[in-house]
Image 1: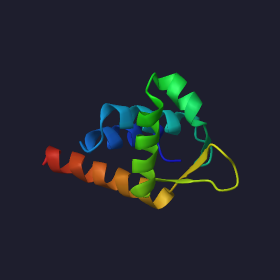
Image 2: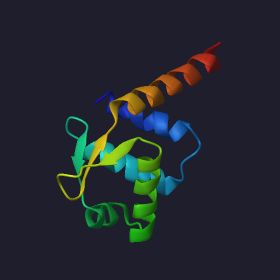
Image 3: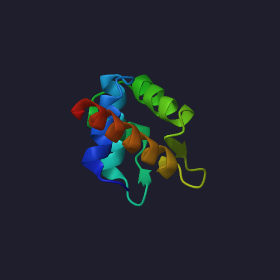
Length: 101
């Protein structure tokens, strides 16, 4: 996956996600290996201190936006969509470049 710190900054800078969304996203990024992460909702809930419904809401949001997809072969597994990740990084870089001009 892309530079993890840069990816986390990119998602935070968009201004369209709640703090809970960002917590879930950053946790998924931290546990991802080759764009795949196996992290059951219960573990996400425990690690973030969030309510189960909030975790599901965040995961559903990222799925609807095409950032992750649920792996149909393994329960609790999600796959980051590299094309979407690349787009988020590009958007972030463009935003940074426009601020420095």
